[in-house]
Image 1 (spheres, one colour):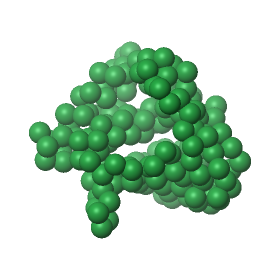
Image 2 (cartoon, rainbow, N blue to C red):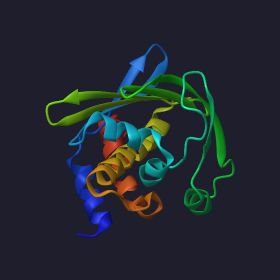
Image 3 (cartoon, one colour):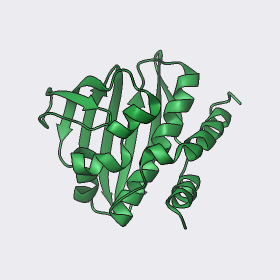
Length: 184
């Protein structure tokens, strides 16, 4: 099975994220289970040498609440997608190792929550995009769906294919999320 086929198969087996509303904010929530201990998943969420496999940007800065961070996109993403603002600013809002990690990315808010379960770790990921546009939520949902799939591959195999090589899977999930959110 090729890397692309592995990503596609794992992504297809995962539950779709859900659209959530809080006042006038529109967010996304994903729940995933990983067959790895909380500490291993925590490292994958917080360490640069792990982030490069599944997240489109690095997190640079001190790991503590209220710490300013920079979020440079990986060079492959900048080149392929013509990103004109390759480094964004953010702040770590929540730092509670190894269970809760919350930070801002541009105007988006991201919260990662880990809980130990019988067969490993349950991850609940919630994000509140700066722009509450539903069309933007579709694209974000598909992207995060694939990021979380890449995270599975990293944890299970020790690596994952470059995200810049799996666009076809992301586009397929944009269609799935359009249907899920009633836009298709």
